[in-house]
Image (cartoon, rainbow, N blue to C red):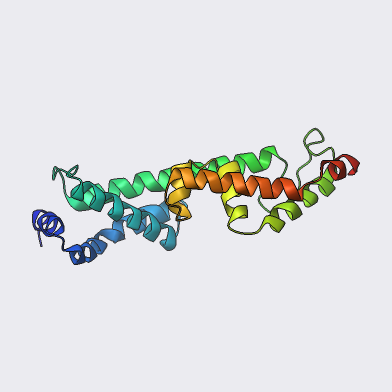
Length: 186
């Protein structure tokens, strides 16, 4: 099936032809693998690219200027680079608050003046709120993800409902944290 035939089939409502696009995944898998990713990462970004492609075709925003495979590769590449940037920001934030990749505290007396007891206390409080709150809070606070991305990742109906969930989760976390206890930590 040519690219034009595939687009025509999609516009007619034949979503089964999307399966044909997976033949182009090899180049995405190879590129993601060369850029600190694995096969699962490649599949995730490729599926996101297919969704973007499908939405653009159905909205009339896609013009066949190059091969569909090139279009999917570019979307996948952009998605993966965005994920790497978010990971880098998360790792930088972890190092700023004194947590290394292995979860050990680095030596930074200004940030860790309450020592491992404070970190432990806060980790326990975060664990008590449970999922999905823990995941939502980590995504917003540590990864700096936008509400639109969180809504998509955690299957909320909109960015507004993701934001409301974040606020509920913050309230749960506040209920678990006692400032009196934090002050008394050594």
